[in-house]
Image 1 (tube, rainbow over the protein chains, first blue to last red):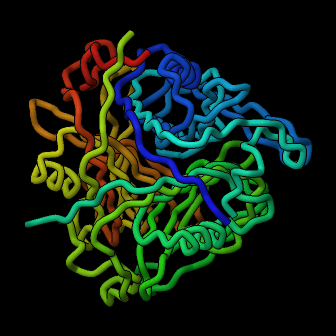
Image 2 (image 1 turned 30 degrees about the vertical axis):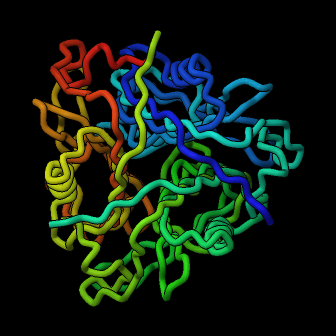
Length: 147
Length: 147
Length: 147
């Protein structure tokens, strides 16, 4: 098996505005900078969080909203292509005032209080999402299977 | 104190097959690509999770299994050597259908539903695991202490 | 909008001593190596954890301490400058013996049992923290807003 490898390219580091939508803002930056492949990490706090849980049997995303102020414990994901355009996929973990952790697949609706962001662009073969019938998810093609 | 530093080398990015063992698959890729040192990040969902918690007094790992469908909120770790061969060490956080987060030291037994993986290979001085009597864990040698 | 980008520089990888303060040790390494900008990731276990939750209305950090042995599920953050000196900002997720996850903004008081650390230094324009009156937090200046 031959696996393609990638090299590091630009890294962007900076903050998001208070009130910004976390997911939409990251998507906008990746689109504007034309980042075709890379890794994203965010740190900070939000005034509310919106994630989803994928029901593997019904093959649908179930939205979960946390309407409270939360720390972003971790928010990590990737950028690749969908319909030829930059597409961001991230999962996030949040903590409330007692430290209790919750999370899921990050969606629009998560509102930034303060957020420090790092986007690590790579260069190499494009990964383009397409519907995978097995899972019902938009996954990279079969040629991207590493094992 | 002089600390060795590492440079970035190849980055692998791709997916794992549905039904694959998360830990074993990552280990297999690192072995086949002969990745001696690096960083690993995984994102996705699993049909069940197997982790462990280290009992620091008894110096034994206690297995914890979650027999349900879960999102991988975060799964981050490193690759180094053990007995001269690539060895993967990762910790994982998962969320259930309510967003509740759980996790531990990733072990074999975690089954992939969908998984997007990034392995960032480094180059530089090897780190080889050996039994550390203080903790009962296989840690890198004393020369690897940064502080 | 023109966004500055960064390039990868040195990566440090190694362990922290048992009994070390997790936050203070990472700060010390970044200071000694004069790391002005970068990313930090830690993995391991602690004998107790100290984090905080930012009260967004009162604009104060509320300390939360977990006096038990915990796995570090994830501990990710950045290095930038504050008053011209390296300053570390990290958030951490921990799990107890049942796998239950908790976390927050990492503070001094988290004691290492075993810890594997990676510090990825970048090079490029400095990011210096200053009081942001809107949030009450020490954030990078307005020129660092990515979106």
